[in-house]
Length: 491
Length: 120
Image 1 (cartoon, chains in turn orange, green):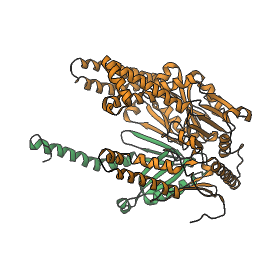
Image 2: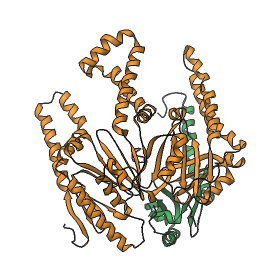
Image 3: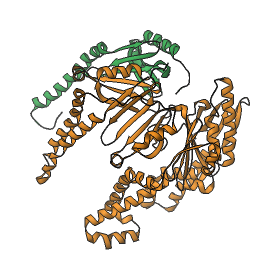
Image 4: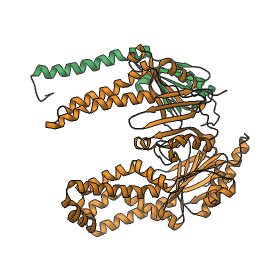
């Protein structure tokens, strides 16, 4: 069915033909279990060829049916071979636009575009995998004209260019020329900070787990040189030498991954949007409308806290739990300088006018209940361990006590006319959320007979990103105050 | 055979206790749940409390309501009951077992009170 001509800013357009290769690779990735069975199961060669041909046919068919257009102030994406679907994103609802280039995309000169909108917490509302520069420019013109049409229909005056216009200006502007275009560079991640971010992140431990599993379970599939090095030089030195080598490999791989992901992370304030760019071989650029930011989250991981660092994230509708990279404001900052960085990036964000409120002693005691309960359970289980291993049972209770005391001492809150702030520790991480009081979407007060008896309650608030913040135990009247004030329209 | 070990009266005793607990839950829990559940609708918010031992009280600002969803299965339909789900961009809260007319009236009222300004 053809589109009506009225309000058509961009007719139905297919992705760049390079999608055929990327689509084939994607289909083959999904068919890996079948390929493993056919290749290692001794099936004739033509079966594998047929599977490859089938993947290619699927990619061609997907490319033929996948078309995007801009009609009536909305971005439309038609896709699906068997189940046809049409995704419609009103341009006025777009909260963030992210463009990225993997190494292969960079080599062939195409971009991947992710369009975010509220209610798409698990991913992007629309993803266009392969767009050439020319098609991007066409899409830009179409979205801008669609945005203007929306503005005409809804004549609420907005400050400066739209998110879309800002985003496209960003794509056309290199960081080198940023300072000459009235852009304020907030922060740039140095190489040393990138290394610290990598070393204190989770990637190295995950890679270590992977290399340990690979070495002890699948060592026969390793390259011959690596296998010879490990078997002839390292293994004779003992298990400790093997583990140290694997740790070194994991650290090296983690640093490479960190460099690929975070290299030259740059945060720029441009009028009413924040823009970030990063990446070594692949490039990623993100644009977030300031008006869509509901809160900033300061996350202090255990190792980063010891070194005095933290990471900064934003709560934005449509950018949810699924992707840490999308909600990242800045990956690593000195904790004592985090406030000044946030103030420079988001001067609009209301900060508490007074120091955060701590919890009274009678509430703090409640924080010991849960960790000590779990610790007792672990202690009982560990008493069944054989021989000297029973001594491990002495660890959980002191650990639980320390955790309970730390959680009680670090829990803080504040609310005033403009802002709401919650700070809490879960296990190793400490988080602080500073948000607009009226930006919260859902609030919850939790209680139980034992809590009510001692005048204690829990409080949680949720943002439109789907993420939340909460304090498990606080004075019930304070929790009720938060329930009564947070999320209400600020007069 | 219900359990592979123990004398018959232990095996059937365990089954009996299990069935009795389930029956007690089916018979006793709904009236208790009905007594502790309440909701209130003002021009600015929907306030909902539920839970028997662990109580939860949710407040949904009216201007944050995105969609309202009513649903009823065949049994609920027979008894003229409806579940109402109030959705926001941050999640949803549920009002279960409302009278159908009450749910319809509530739906109308909330949709009238909801400010549809786009400030997500």
